[in-house]
Length: 187
Image 1 (tube, rainbow, N blue to C red):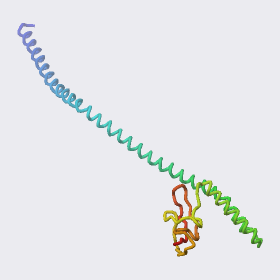
Image 2: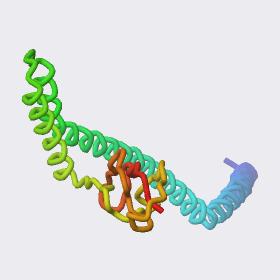
Image 3: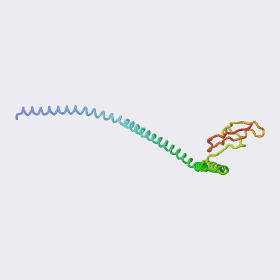
């Protein structure tokens, strides 16, 4: 090979190298731009990540609250049904006594009266077990919170506001009035 050929091949190699270097430089610029964009995204990314975490926590909390509400409603309904069942279970013996009295074919008035008294006492005992109190007796003082006066009589032989007659007894559990007593009051 001659010197000229060697020079020209060396020049070609250098030209190729410089072109390759330019291409590499051009490729690096987009990579640099991409790297800068990635670093900007990474700066925004912690906020986005925190937002995504907060959204996820909120969704979980909402689902948990919904489940809690459903579970509470179910427990409340079960408790209510249990209380009704226990109450009715306590009343069943009195109903049994009434059924036996109705099935009895005898015309014995005294026996029937005694059976009704036993049944009545059974109801009163059951109410006592359940915490139900009866009120509204003759001679009590009229209280508009406890009594419903359906009649009034003017008679000096009774004290002012005294209950003269009871048409229906009242019932309460603790401070809650189930039914006010229906009474006749005086003066």
